[in-house]
Image 1 (tube, helix red, strand yellow):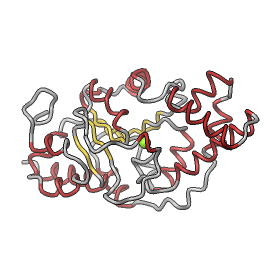
Image 2 (cartoon, protein in one colour; image 1 turned 180 degrees about the vertical axis):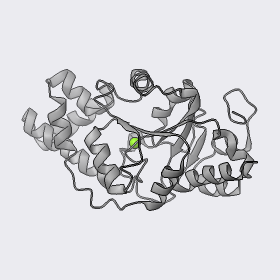
Image 3 (cartoon, protein in one colour; image 1 turned 60 degrees about the vertical axis):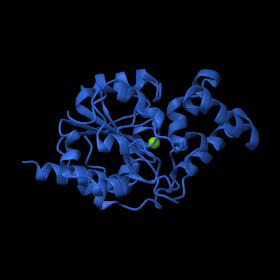
Amino acid sequence: MTQTTKNSPPSPLGSLARKTPPFAAENQASLPSHQNRVLAHVETFVFDLDNTLYPSHCDLWPKIDARITLYMMHHLGLDGLSSRALQKHYYHHYGTTLRGLMQEDAVGAEDFLAFVHDIDRSSLPPNPTLADAITRLPGRKLILTNGSRDHALNTAKALGLEALFEDVFDIADADFVPKPHPTAYERFFDKHAVDPARAVMFEDLTKNLLIPHQRGMKTVLVVPKPGQLDHRDKIEIAGREIPPHIDYVTDDLESFLLGLLEDATNKP
Ligand SMILES: [Mg+2]
């Protein structure tokens, strides 16, 4: 580990990571290769799923969001507006709407997850460039998601990534305690024997990278390209200030990974 450890002097990359978007792609392109070697120690590559392995302009989340509203209308006997309001209240209070439904309404997780993730993924194009980059990463590759395993597998399949990951750690594996709660990460580290000090996490939400950073992981925030549609909840979208627990920012995950591989190839 070299330039960007927590207590090291700030590197050019570290300072770039704290600038406001858009910045990542152009900065990566200008980086001398030795500055990318900060990830050379990494053994495990951990990926969030939604809005990380596919961009946030894809319409998967709005489809899931609408299915959650519909599920709550059916199961709680609510009209659309009331269902929507309670859905968002649970999300913000419990971290996921599901956790609120389990705590307050004794809703069964399996039934909920199967219903809300029963969506059309045909709008999600295969991403062979990302598949190539992930394939070539020298280490273990895992998905860590607040969604379900089936959703992760079906989404990865639509992207052409289904064979590339060792496993998926889903919300059931986390006993329905979602990221960013520390327990979710501890269960993940334990189940998959991941040493956080030798791992990196890719994620679209800054709040979900705080505990990983504190546990020693390198953190990469994946943001939309400038001007790109962003279907995530507005409250979830990062502000223009990048918090210090973010080590890297990119609006192009494929290029970021390929840059790491190029650096590894050039290593003397
Ligand atoms: Mg996400």
